[in-house]
Image (cartoon, rainbow, N blue to C red):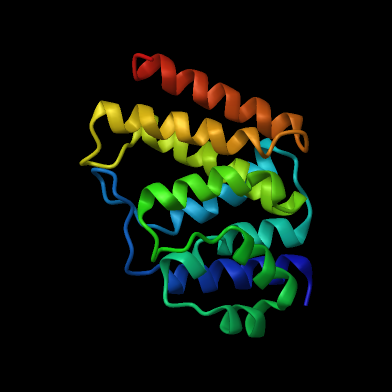
Length: 180
């Protein structure tokens, strides 16, 4: 298979896995929009062309947010993709505060590919929290998300100036619009 075919197969897989999920915004947009946006940010704004990184980007939430198993992911896309997605997967059995603390604390130990995906994920989420926030999030929670995202990104710096600049712009806009 070609890299493009692998990417498209991963996008279709992620779409099936997330088909009944919605984002928490007022519009309840389809969840698949998020992993596709993360891949688009990597490619379009970050100049990332590595097929493994882009493929893992569209799959980055499948282990965390669906019934997909690591074995299923490895069988479909190989151990490299599985391991990359595992790096980005939070343990949903832990309380949210502990998951967030771990994500910030372990950011420096991520592989280069995982860091790029993490940056693009935070860009997408900061933009969403700014412009299309979860319906039940008040202004304070949105501001706290920006603070947490900044702590996570501190451990991912040094790999992609274009992505970091994109993140910094999204954060500046978020802080300005949220009155920070």
